[in-house]
Length: 122
Image (tube, rainbow, N blue to C red):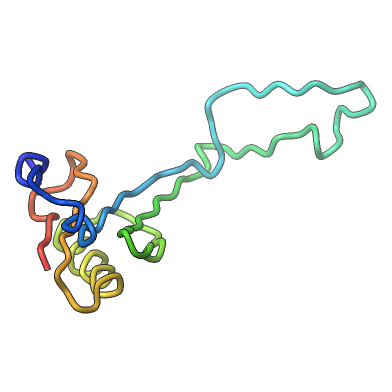
């Protein structure tokens, strides 16, 4: 739907679009076994050991936005984020930083968990 709405954009129009996205990562991957080639003498040397933790070890999530002119700050996300909290505390300050004179179009990465309210015209 967003593409249909913006298919008439010219090269000059795309200068004012801000793109964003988030990424999650595991602090200690728990995907299974890890194999290391080593000699008997190297069995317990630190370079041949992989740290592990019980019960997963945790994860993290970051969010950032970028435009043609600049990249915004990388923000660490903690806990559940509502659409209004996301827009009010992250998106609007980022838009004001990247486009202090306004006139920007914010395009979120549109995961299914976000609502349509996440698209903001400033």
